[in-house]
Image 1 (tube, rainbow, N blue to C red):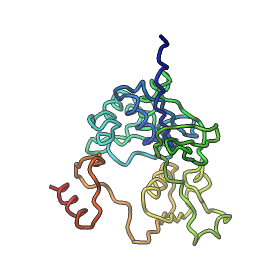
Image 2 (cartoon, rainbow, N blue to C red):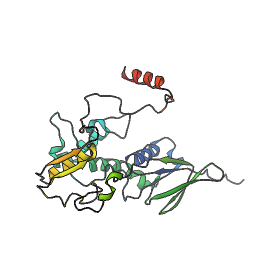
Image 3 (cartoon, one colour):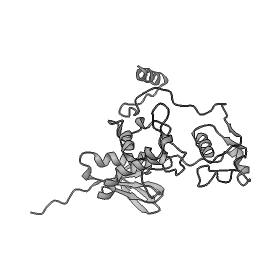
Image 4 (cartoon, rainbow, N blue to C red):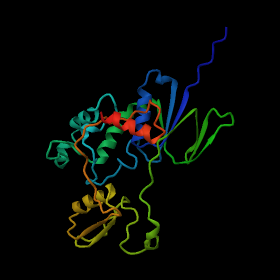
Length: 272
């Protein structure tokens, strides 16, 4: 009697290997019957877990949420905080501790936390890192699968997960004519983007959100003493988080509200 052929693994392709994509891969790899899966994470960076948000090497770029409220595990809110306490990072970064005792480590540290937890599954081969950029996605003729075309070759999948980030800051149309002007910084996150700014120079930052806060922090670390002006179309500056401890993970199981009244009821129910 001939043996039955082994069942084919369900192929999962995750587009993006920053926090979201790496976290999806981690949860799938830890799930029951994960041996039935073949998980590919498509990410051009050499390491998974950092992405655009958590790969910055600038020491002044920190997480903007306390460590106790960041976790890869919804059922374990202290997951990152415990790892951080045992990582040795805080001993080398006393400025990470705020006056109320909360820890705000450098963003790259959170990227390292994600990468370290995913590493065993990369080592076992359950998760595969496709180090390339996706250029397009096509549906199979049968409609039952997908092909992701990447700079490293095609990736065929039964299930496709979109975990791509937003692009880097772009130049507003109104400022496009200034692209080549001396002193104009188009991408503040580019390597050494602020290195040409003198310590006494006046700096205008277009925008007053989180990117603006990053730039002010970096200029301060560099010893900048000149005037810094942040331009906001609403006249507001970046504000801190309210001291409210809400549920950090949303409800993705229930059907979303489709009317304004339905949304209002959902908000009221969440607020108690």
